[in-house]
Image 1 (tube, rainbow, N blue to C red):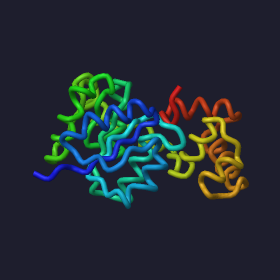
Image 2 (tube, rainbow, N blue to C red; image 1 turned 120 degrees about the horizontal axis):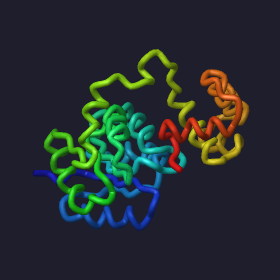
Image 3 (cartoon, rainbow, N blue to C red; image 1 turned 60 degrees about the vertical axis):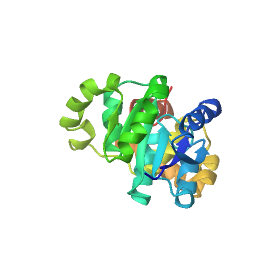
Image 4 (cartoon, one colour; image 1 turned 135 degrees about the vertical axis):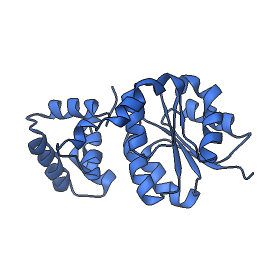
Length: 212
């Protein structure tokens, strides 16, 4: 059987390197990157079969990176790595297009199994997160019950604002003007009924766009 082409994405260099070492015996690791934005830029050239992706990352979090990647390359399988065993997060990961969900603390024993399962067309969920995840997936998320959803661009702007970046810096990263950044910020605040930048950051944390 052909070895899967794998890209590892994690903003912690030592963890990234340890995952690469773990996978090298059974996979062709074709890339190791530090954030979701770097993944979207490199993926078309690297042509991975599977992306092992951290959930909480700067510039562009794993959930939003996966949504954009699946639109760009629908055949790519995504396995999320996280320290968070919250079944709600696991359910959201699968809504974002995941094929696997593995806890970092269990990665040494579970990641190779997850890659094998995903390569064979199955899904893998770390046992600690399984209970409760199915219930969550069976119930319609709050955001689907008529509330207005942020667009992918608004989520990008919100993450960068919550990370403390200036409008000018955000404009440079997203290749848009600072005025456009401001437009997105104030459109979000009006849409969400939010009055201050601090409330906007709290909303970003609540929606897992950034992590504490």
